[in-house]
Image (cartoon, rainbow, N blue to C red):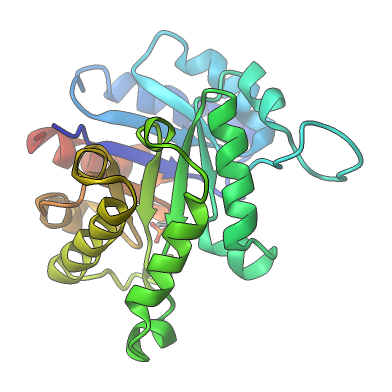
Length: 255
Ligand code: PEP
């Protein structure tokens, strides 16, 4: 049975103090959550302080990217060991903003996934199509290339320690959410690609989140779909009450 995973991607929002305050609120209100994995991804600058806040709680720490090299002349970048030392357990990889603005490709996603797995951390691998790609009939080919690229040379055992976030680019930060049916159909396709690569057992065990304007008022419908195992949340993760409402929607229908 796949456990729901609700992850908040705080992006380049919130100061260190604001991040600490939000983390404290989330820890407090999530005390009774037993079945849903809760993950928060603050700015790198706040990781250390947020790690102290969530210690011993059921809230886990993520970062929003890493570099695939261990060290060296990579100005502005952060290595896996640096974040692991701070208590990071999950790494968001291949977010559409990374792909769109910072030259992320399926190849660099693969390098980052390998590095994250080799350190024993869990990658949250983001995939998703633009509106033009969807309307142009290229949804399946785009997603298929993203999945095959991300999982290139990743073993079955390693794949089991990954999470996918299906995030239609047209739904991210726009307030336009995929319908329950669109999200379900697409996520079933994502699972079928995983099945082609790894077989039924791995495909049915892997958690696939939906991301893209998930909010308290649409979360229950999306999370009620067979192939949706959680959410990667941007805007609604920046307030404890809306993030908690989504966590509660997951907990209420835990599979
Ligand atoms: C995201 O950035 O991953 C995301 C899903 O953002 P939002 O929830 O704001 O659409």
